[in-house]
Amino acid sequence: MTCIITCTFDNESQRWTAASEDKYGLVLESNSLEALMERVKIAMPDMLEFTCNYTGPVNLHFKAERITQLDALEVAV
Image (cartoon, rainbow, N blue to C red):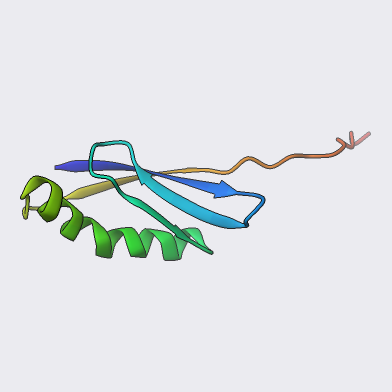
């Protein structure tokens, strides 16, 4: 089984949020992407067992998104 997890950085709260694109109901947040991925690894087996009665192997496919705004672009000459 493969679960797709999208990790998004919120500039306002300065936190990462993870949500599953599948039907598993995963929503977690953390201060760093690495810590968030570890939290997902811990939570996902229990979520799959609870929501799908699945206890087999799981591939976690992480996708990270972070939008950064640049106030002005400096062009090197």
